[in-house]
Amino acid sequence: MPDGYTAIFALFALVVIISFFLIRVSRSLAVREEEDDGRPGIFTRFRRRDDFFVVDGTGKTILMQAVAQGFVDGIDHVLVKASVEAVNSATDDGTTALHCAIAPGNPAIVSKLLAFGAQPNVADHDGRTPLWLAAHKEDARIAALLLDYKADPNCRVGKGRLTPLMAAAKNGRIEVVHLLLDRGADPRLVSEDGRTAALFARENFKANMVEQVTDNQKLARMLLRLEAGLKPGA
Image 1: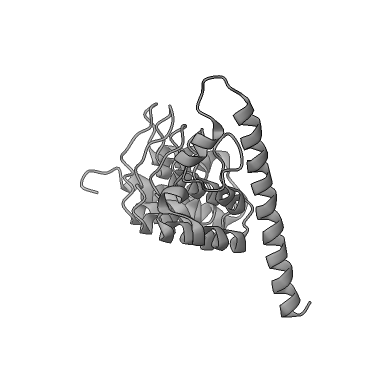
Image 2: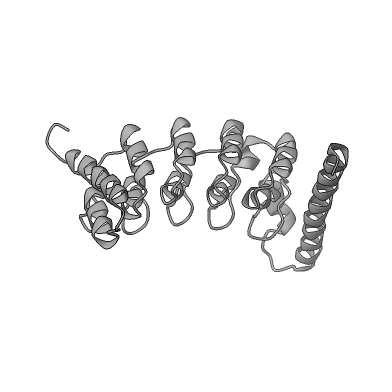
């Protein structure tokens, strides 16, 4: 398809998506304003969230929707009209656009949000920060971006009190473990049940022994580095 037609098609798709979300917002407004139960109306909630194209009663925004779908052109269009407060707007469970950006795994999207002012250390209601979510992934590029913007490598999550380093070690994310150690993660910290990142790594190593010698060597080097960090003076 010629470049001109491609651009026109992309613009048309963007207009359709935005129109769809705005129609949903309008309908939600109409329904909620008819309910007189003494609670703040949905319009009041929109105002508190900076009128930022909120698409449902949970506080999900059109930016979150575009981010989750990896719709880069849509994100650019929304950010032109957004404020920093709106970009850091959270749903009722504490999810922000930056949280939504971790699952698709697109570093360009994460970079756009961070550069605009997205807060890297905001936790959802389960205590999960974007870095903690990124520590579960194979690709270390997003974790590196978050750390560049002062994400806390030693944040704690949930009842288990796991750090991003523990999460990465537990899941065998070798590249992420080395990155976190290079960027200030403390291997001496322990989880609620007393386990270190090294112990999580050892458990993963035992559970996932593979035939390929190279993979075993990488896992072993990761484990040795974590255990070296436990020695006095390390």
